[in-house]
Image 1: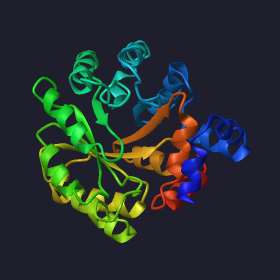
Image 2 (image 1 turned 60 degrees about the vertical axis):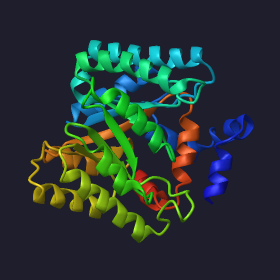
Image 3 (image 1 turned 180 degrees about the vertical axis):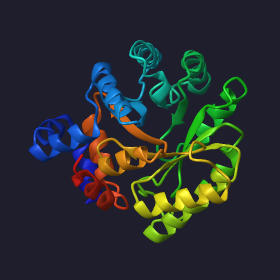
Image 4 (image 1 turned 135 degrees about the vertical axis):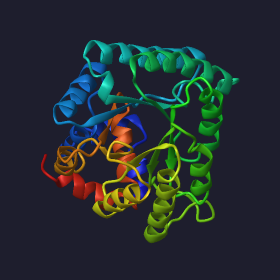
Length: 305
């Protein structure tokens, strides 16, 4: 099934047909905050009204050339300006895909670091946290960029896929004082010598990574929809001497909204991942292709707002 879902995410013809299906449209409306900035701003404002925080993530293409990378950089700067104008800077985190700002281009690492500095300088002035994302198999690249920026921007964040066998070591390496570390299970579409493919093993790896970050001086952001893992995170945080403001729980937009609202109402810091942009269909299909997460995801999407 995973292969079929991934195949559906490729090709303009398939995309056009599938995205018009009622079920696909319904899923996308729940998960994606539209194509543009205005729709995303509206989604963040709705979350803020119910005491929830937001992580915004632009679903754009991998930069094919420096001009495209510069365009994506300008987009992020424009987003920061709109957050300021709409008084949403205090509730929003900016997630940046390193491929979109040109990391994969010739001399991409150096140029991507400079583009990130432009974004991070403005975000820091506005009080908006920034977290780097590289997707599956990009941890070395993300860590390299983090090292470039950490001196000037010590609180810049990083996303760690916990299902990889290396992830516990990655957490120890990036969990420096003040660094935001977002833990997520990942899609588990790896080979066995790189990742834990069994559900139970992957969950144990998640918990080991959780403990590594909770007992560090980093700032943990725990991305899960599992009631069991949420309870584990709350227990580990308490044992590590963390107060309710010393870490966050993170969930996807549209998934388990009642649970999100309940936790936020109890004073828990709940940050909702709000993707938007032209590649919303592809993002939706990739989520559904994740075998370990599909059941939890679909169950969460069926929950009434």
